[in-house]
Length: 508
Picture 1 (tube, rainbow, N blue to C red):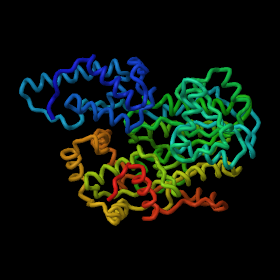
Picture 2 (picture 1 turned 90 degrees about the vertical axis):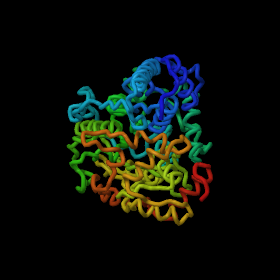
Picture 3 (picture 1 turned 30 degrees about the vertical axis):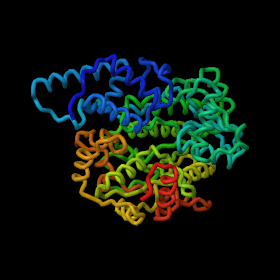
Picture 4 (picture 1 turned 180 degrees about the horizontal axis):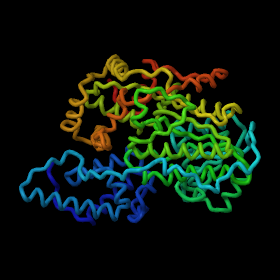
């Protein structure tokens, strides 16, 4: 790939404004070049799309981390113009350089996550009397515009008579309500009869007092009975520092809300990612085990989940009633197949189908269907004996990637499994169009993120992962009708049928 004709900061700035607006469905005039990019809610896939389009534009592939280190369009366009000029000078000098591999390899600073896990000492729930709310009237929920959040809203509406107060980033209450309704509609779980029970709270998880102001914060603290905290900025590209405000400090504000006026149970959605330290590789991790090892967790998102869960446990030790729920990667609804087509699993499967190759690696498909995860969280949260405990929502019977490839072939798709290094070479040399999702994921898949120079796929090799027990969860669910659907060809066919129906996948 050779460099394109000359670009100035102004050229790049105009391009970024136009493409960001298109990516997040805004008008170009609504984009502020001084606004932090994270405030536009870019997820990992959108960030990768932007990086890949920049590669097409400029002729070299910027590091995804540039989107954080130069956090607004004004500074990013200036840095990209400088990098373009630097590469032009090198090209003019006749020195050959490889430009199809990630450049500007910016390493995030080394963090001591243990030092980050400090809960504001003024959050003292032990000053309030203990309560167990059997029939809450008012529930506060974060993450309602996400995939899991939508299904949690559905379950809470069906299993309780409570009004659901949903924190949502929006210009006003009407826009907030529209975003919540649109999200539920997109997963075919909107029910008009529940309309009046969904109450938007315009705010921001990354802001002090959740961005709603001291007066409304106190009103919520008085009226809310129970809290479900599933909101987080899920981005596998940004470092810890970019995600801390929403994922760590936002959790602290939720704990503050729970500890004021009256005690409110917090049902926190964590992640099995807290066990990504190499210390746990190959070891059995039980649900009530403490997790003290953070060394070697290098994804910013995983780091924030480790710290945030530590804050929740500190609050628990101070007297706050909590339950902790740790899902793995979440797959689609087992009944309808409806899923988030922009998640990593679906983008990878689509890209590999288009390429004709899957990597022959020891991966286990341990994702759990979203309907199982949401039902389990709501059921467990309503059992008094769950308070103070953690639950791993890992699939109890994961299946190897080789089985998925076998099913794909049986559905008529012409694919084969090839050695991982060969698959990487195919990705670098033969995936050259944004029509293949793997093209937009290349920076994510190929960049080396740790001292061990691991890529993201390296991290998920079976040999590097712990064995995560979910026995406590299965035991706690035994008295209910909630069972995790087995990973079968029928389930995979349900997902495939939905993806074909929506046009995400082509017919074999």
